[in-house]
Image (cartoon, rainbow, N blue to C red; front, top):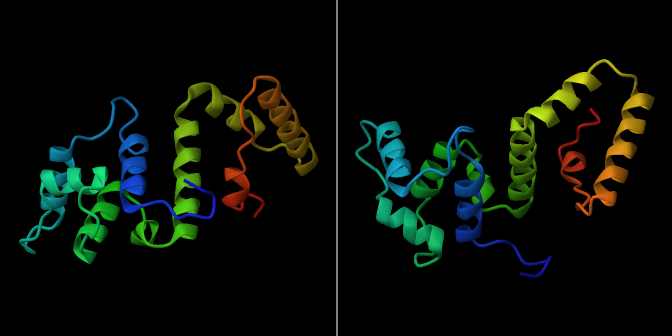
Length: 151
């Protein structure tokens, strides 16, 4: 996929399956997502089948209804715009990445220790972290900048 190409619905849904789940377990199953949507739509009589969710995730089905988009977004706790607006998708992915990083106890420990430091000290700490990432061959991730953490 090229940089100027928007991710497909299937790619976006797959990202949610891989990244958004309780910390103590792996990804949700299609049946769990379908059941969660069914429970959330009580009274509406509208659900989404596990089979339909699988087809959307694999790209076999490409045109979800607005109801399905909203139901999946609600289940995974993201705005519905995640699926239709590439800028919203990138912001949401950055937020998901930040939350995933904060699940790591060592990352959380560093973040908590940084609380209360001056702006200059935080900038210095950020520089040190970026240098360490480069030394370890990790990519530099601009997701923190995408989140507007300077506010």
